[in-house]
Length: 493
Image 1: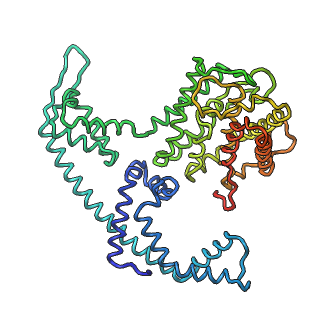
Image 2: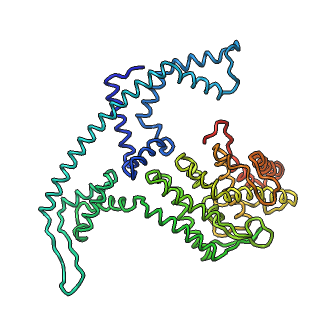
Image 3: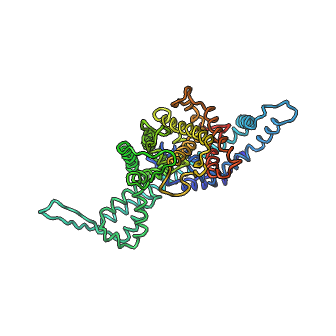
């Protein structure tokens, strides 16, 4: 399948149009052409339905039919048993060799040229149709505005003895129906904004009793909750407020088996604020690519600034109490660090995360690493002392409660740290952050040292598992969380 027929071009145009309609909300919400291009370039990373789009399926089938024979012949050639064409024993080496040969083939060049020429014609055709549709819509819009201007009667309510002057425009049911349609999320941002302005000048009583109020209210709520820079400002302000509260209250929690009640007013308030922030952290990845990178950077930096808040006496210090820090509450709310996993998933945000961690907030990685080291040392002490309390330890967050022991808070922090470090190790640029210098260790901790630490944690917890079934809860928690550290051969930047 080297050439595309007129029927193929028509099908491609239809499938491309279908794709653009499916992602219309994301593209129309982009503040600039550059941001829209970024959305399309990183669509595979940010859209879970990417491989289900018919356009993507068509292109995949076209590539397979064009290069299938080349790939098959090259595979047979490179895997002959006579040893004459051996290229190495690795599976990845074979894939790289086949890929390189296929891209150098005449079939590949012909396929790309055909596809390029066809897509140019398809896109130009869509652009022409779009411009024609826009011209018709603008003409209809001008006629509609002219009609509205002739049919509106303004009732000015003013008092010569008062500076208050307010005016409302009488509005018909048909106009409210049009406004409801214009507020739909599929409409361009300018159209929705204009509809909001018109709606502000309508009497509230007329709006509330109109027949289209249900759809109008739904679209109005959607328009008012669309993420904007104002929401970003609210989040960053909340992060600063929480940071200030932690600095002023200097809360603490007991060590060992002593408990802390998170329903205490001063802790409960901070926990609710952290929960609100955590919910936003997990959802923000769905829309921040629509906005300039500076908004995303503000969210990430304000979060890192809060979580890097460490007091002089932190986790693992001797004594009867430890300082309660933002990371402890976040670990209780999101023990598997889902927020961080989502931020690291897409290249668009991962680049900013890793850059900020390297330049300004490396202390976050240091704290996570120190917590793993501290937990390893604690495990050794528990193993030697056969502390029965460790057998009763459960994974924090598995059951909703209000009272936690100091050990459970430390364990939640450990699991959260383990998940963060595991996500960093997946990516090449994440591993470049190592080695890390930590307190009470003469030499910096390398990647190898970290892997050894994690293996020791698993080993120490597997030993009692063979003889003492009472350790099941604690060990299952460790086992579930160490699987978050996949060491991939082909790492992602």
